[in-house]
Length: 237
Image (cartoon, rainbow, N blue to C red; front, side):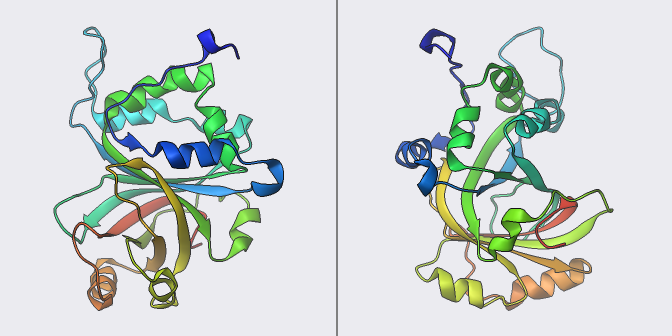
C-alpha cells in the first residue's frame, strides 16, 4: 500500500507505546509467532462520532459495529475470548467488556492497522471507546497456540486478574488453578505496563468474591480483578 493510501487511524482512548509498537513491527519471521492481545474496554455512554449526522447510539453499540471478525479471519487471527464485565472488584476504575484476539504473528497485528477495510471499521471503535488497555501476552501453556477457536456453548463465569508485579512467576504460581499469561508489553493504555494476566473459571459470584478476597497484594492502580460473563471462552474451557 502506498504511503498516501495508508490509513491514519485517530483515537482518544489510549496512548500507544511506540517502542513496543516498533518491536512488534520489526520481528523477523524466525523471531515472531503467536501473540494474544487482551483488550480491556470502557465505553462512552453515547458514542462520540465526529460527524454531526452520525446515528445516536451507545458506545457499546458502536463497538458492535466495529467488530473486526471478518478482517481477523483474513489475516489468520482468532477471537478466543469475549466477555461482559459483571463486577469490578478492585478500585474505582471499572471496565465494561473484555476481548482477546490471538494473532498468528506480532507483525500481523501491526500490518492490520494499515488495511483500508480495518480503517473503515475503526471509526466505530474510536467513537465508542472511552478508554482501553491492550496487554500483549504469551500463555504459560503454549498449547493454547494451537487450540481451535471455540464454538458457542453458553455463558461462563470467569475471574480475570491483571497486575503489575516485580515477581511474575510468583504471581502466576500463587493461583495454580488459573490459566496464566505473561505480558510482553502494553501496546495501548495510560502509560502503565502490566506483567501478568490470569483467568479462573468459577461457578457463581459468591465463588468469585471468595477467590478475589483470597489473593494477596491486589491494590488499586496496580491491579484489576473482575468477574466476567464469557460468551466465547477459548482460554479456560
